[in-house]
Length: 600
Image (tube, rainbow, N blue to C red; front, side, top):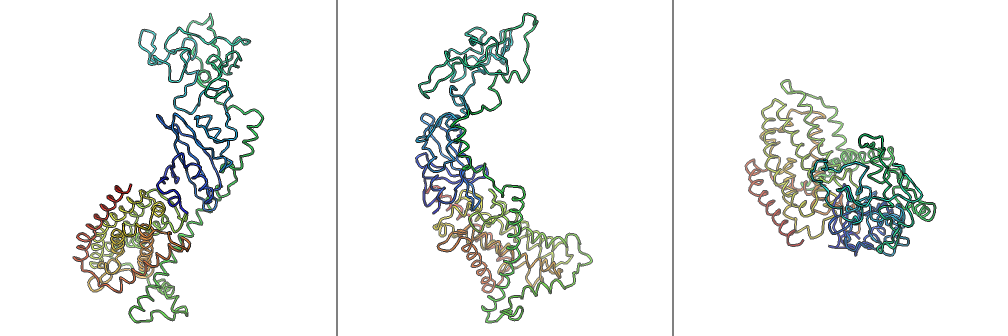
């Protein structure tokens, strides 16, 4: 069961700080944590608060799924007037001291917490230090004898601070006047060193009605002033470290006394993800993870095009009442493409004398490598993606546009008029079909509310099939045209321009162009599956199986198109793009916007 199925509109899923984030109301907080724990997010990493003035506090928890290596940020908000939230200790034991720390620093009360008492600060400390309206006592009183606040020039200029900061009692010393109650010395101590905190006097302790705990008066928190020396001719300005000691609390962290608090933290330490030993987080583990992902992507890049090419041989043969390859490999010619590769490797590598050699040699790589880069960001299952980019769709569309440059480079560098004409046709075809391709992809991105490819698949619902049907057809046809697959193969029309930009290529360079075509079929099928067919969503079978079933079904349709439709003329090809696909893509974009506004 997914989050959308369990909670419906009660949760909002987004991307924040590179993490998948789930926002939920405070009333559903425990239910969300329980659901995450029961669906594999067994490790509780941390919980903290965020001051969101003027009316609320945010509470954020981070959980982790060790089997899929997925992380979740869970967020909720509580009102500032009554910051209460049910305790998560019953769901994740590791939330115990995190909730105590959040209570202490922000004042958020966790109901049913077994031991909600201060964790780090002394028992008599008043206020919550991480609230934005918290003011330290040392900042309110004068920093040292003779010091001036900004604006106090000494010749009548007005001071910037005319009133006490919010939350400061009225009987505290005023920063803008030299008169007023001074901090009395502490009995039993004549002069306190500047770098040492004063010891509070029990007589100066009062009880707060809100926390029912002793609270220090200002005079107990502020160290006594150091009297001026009679030998000093001018006010002495202390050093930076001394001013820090006066203006702020000490930098060192207060240590907990030995007792229940320490034992509690030690006992729950193993429930925090940060304190566990995670071998995949070591440098060697990260390197192995990157290498493994690259190997899998490289295998997909090399093997799936061969499978599609072999399927094209056999499917076209049966559609045309032929047998196709039968002898290479012994079983229905399964090794025919391997034999073709050996044949290309044995052919002579010829470069025309008038060709631009460097551009001529680079063109096959420019046509092929972009598809490898696109495969890095395409998900094949939940959590199974090389790199999850927040702008994954933008990255895919940008990189796929580079692949067509390989044909243009090949045509221009060949010094052959037929190749140049084929390169010009490729450029015109790219310009025409890039616009409907981008518009159709923008429609599904608008529907999902994200440019992340895994995010689009997770947001997909079954009723998107009729809703985004027009966009799916436009995207698929535009992708075929950019691949120059039949019936959009005018740039390589044999009867007119021989083989177009590839006319002068032989051997392995020609094989790389052929490989780029079949890798393009795989990439287009993957993108159509991810954007419009729900990716890994499907009943009964595992998600990865559903992804590959949809990919091979689309590859079959591409082969079917080659057998069924005749080649379009150049004018027909351009008219289909500008008169047919672009208006349809705009209609789909408008339909998506209307439905998004009406639904939510």
